[in-house]
Length: 129
Image (cartoon, rainbow, N blue to C red; front, side, top):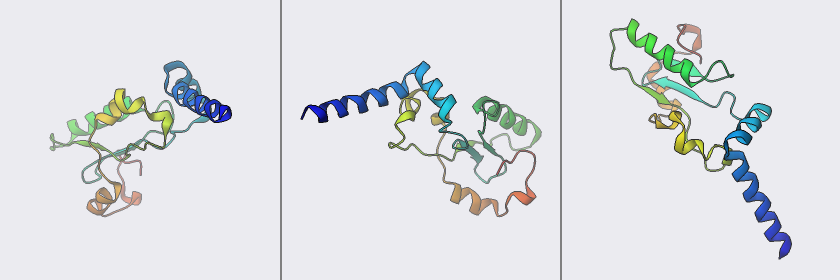
């Protein structure tokens, strides 16, 4: 019985520590658990973006998307996140509540890909995948 309580306590401590600011940053830096996970697209796949490293982040995606909107006649373009909330990924739990990425509406990549109708070989500079 004592060992179960100890394991539960250690598990809760790991979950809590992986979601607290400084320790979360250190774990993310060394473990790189989210590389390539954060993907974004427009409704028809005209614009796609993947966060791969520290330089290619959410802010860069917003800048590129704003640039695309300025250079096209479609001012009503909307960006969607292609990643869902996964309760098994406990190290992201805090992000689900305070990260702007999760404020974007979710859209399945299968839906986008069916509308896009082509793969990367025809992609523009605004498409990562």
